[in-house]
Image: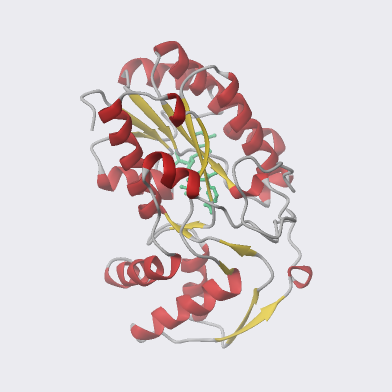
Length: 295
Ligand SMILES: NC(=O)c1ccc[n+]([C@@H]2O[C@H](COP(=O)([O-])OP(=O)(O)OC[C@H]3O[C@@H](n4cnc5c(N)ncnc54)[C@H](OP(=O)(O)O)[C@@H]3O)[C@@H](O)[C@H]2O)c1
């Protein structure tokens, strides 16, 4: 890690927590650092004087964003734009996190970074606007699009499944959305490897731009639910029957891409980073949940 401080935004969020658990970083969250109060961004920046910034803060409530449009854009576009300008002015790298939801999901293969974007909802559109603002700042930026993030703590699909299983005998889960589940800790490990590479080699032009960074392999939400219960069964948990349904049978305010599988080969080619296979990470993460904070 560089002798300069690494500033991590995102407070107690899944990724910010995973980064703070693994490295000596300055982690900041609300109220001190709030994208709704633009001057708080500059004042944190000036008091920390970071050598690199990892922006893990975002408006992540995908359905709520459909009606809370201004707040989503403040956190996902305007805040990152301000942060990126501060990083550009200070001549330091910014690692900014984005999402698979910038795509419409109609492609049949995994998405590569150069594929056309076409977000389906406000969250995806605001995150896409954030990517564009970061690139427009003119600074050095690594933008990592990740997907289906969960952690051993916090609010996420895996923990929700385990919590719901306590009271339900039967569950239905969407089986026609395909993606790459990503454990926050695995993504944090990958990001920290990127930081060490930047420290070791100095900034290279190949580092600039968009990279896909999700767990290896692929599944559906149904597949993730079934695998979660397989793991929970090893811990003696009560397991419900799980039935697959179509997206059309589970209407949500925001439309989700049917295919959000990300091809992460550019990340591997440039930084030598490949996130572990989602299935092995699930085993490890469910074990951690039961040993620390059972759902
Ligand atoms: N979760 C997913 O499935 C997923 C999928 C694809 C991409 N991503 C991206 O991955 C990154 C990390 O996500 P995550 O899963 O760690 O999200 P998370 O657990 O929801 O954490 C996001 C954090 O952002 C902070 N935040 C929200 N609004 C803010 C504002 N107006 N000003 C300052 N901070 C604000 C909150 O921190 P405090 O309230 O604690 O300060 C929150 O804890 C985000 O860029 C997200 O878009 C996530």
